[in-house]
Length: 311
Ligand code: UD1
Image (tube, protein in one colour):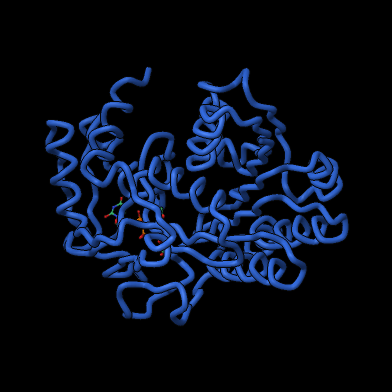
């Protein structure tokens, strides 16, 4: 199988690439390293074809797409909501235009991958209180990031329906695990908690800790991506979470148990715009036949072991 992963040196992308290589697939990675790191691909560096390149370079992308991939996983994105608010036009080019250009090239060249999978976000649901979040409920994209993710997932699905392409889109909930970069205040909370536990630093908890999230371990995300893309169903959107809601403070307590360490907590005002509750309805994914292998507890334990094994 020939597979293309855009954004393959990033957090989720690199975990996906490592698993695809393990499965014996021939993997090509495009990543401009604006957020990704080459060291994320160290475990497979002699086994993948890597291009340090921006997905907005259409000519380059067309040349690569001509290789006629079986699967295309589109993870390249400016993954920061804060960045999209600072630089809406630039992030739009990456998060939307590049996706449409890829779909359009597939259309005009009549290239037909077995699946084109676009990765979107629970951010498309915005602040509406309905829980759990169902794929067909109303959306409320409140930032350029969310608008572009929503537009791109729609475009992928519509290209699928209109031009006979096999496309899917997934909406990630709160993903955690190895290779998530903890160095921005807007990094995934569990990467920041990990860094604080390792360095015995104080962790700033915004709010009362009772906010809930549907945290999912990156290895289950990767398995879901592969499962969804290899399934014969197409032209559909899937939530990817566990369908379980945990308070932040409960997850921190679970993580303390897994690590055997105590987190120093400093409570601060809730962040402006922070949502209080998040939970995925995963019926659609479950009905497709997907079962997560790891779960929150085992995921936290493995994440900690991985962190301790790093240099
Ligand atoms: C996630 C996305 C965000 C998106 C939002 C909408 C990530 C990393 N962020 O935010 O881009 O807009 O979903 O669905 O996936 N927290 C702390 N201390 C910290 C960092 C975070 O207490 O140092 C708290 C936050 O205030 C929040 C919770 O932890 O209540 C989770 O934060 P985060 O990991 O950033 O995820 P979301 O807020 O769900």
